Image (cartoon, rainbow, N blue to C red; front, top):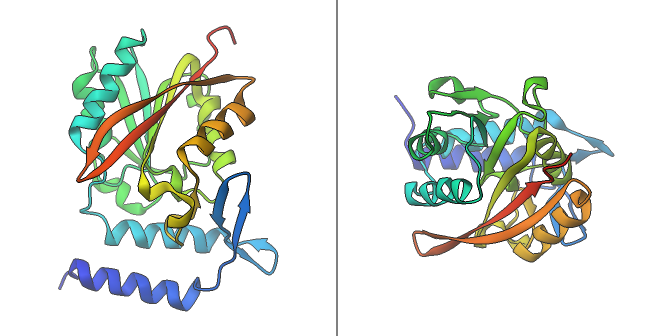
Length: 237
């Protein structure tokens, strides 16, 4: 018999309590991160297991509304981009890539990544850790979107990977909301930073490659406002 959402949530919490309840929290430069370190060593297997189990119990939850993706697609067109290839990182059921394709002309290829093995159950989704890149993505991706960057164990590493994939003039779209603040971190969502802090991080760590060009008011998720930070790669690189 398939578990109910409540049963899945209970099982997930039990796993966390038994395996990851005492993880340390580190703070640096406005970032607050749950560290998956055990005896001074990064426990990647634990991180991956937490993300996979969390994905499965939240599998039927959709964070971002369709209207928000429509707005972002319109913004890409308004800044002169006509994407042929895009990535959506941490997509769970894969709605984001489908909606981008619906609202961008020319039927661009847009794929989603998901660390969980549930990726194989959804179209245009691959099982992939978004901290890594495929060689064919580097310098060939017109836009990258994520509302799941707060699931990163090392956001600077993840952002560096994503920016390396952008074409000259390509855009990185990062959603931000109340859920992403430092006081909201958890074992499943281990990374938190303020909107201003994320803008500063992007411009400080990656200012030599591009910069933040604006922050979009992206409507609401239920009653919560969504804002999207837009970083563009220099077009002369």
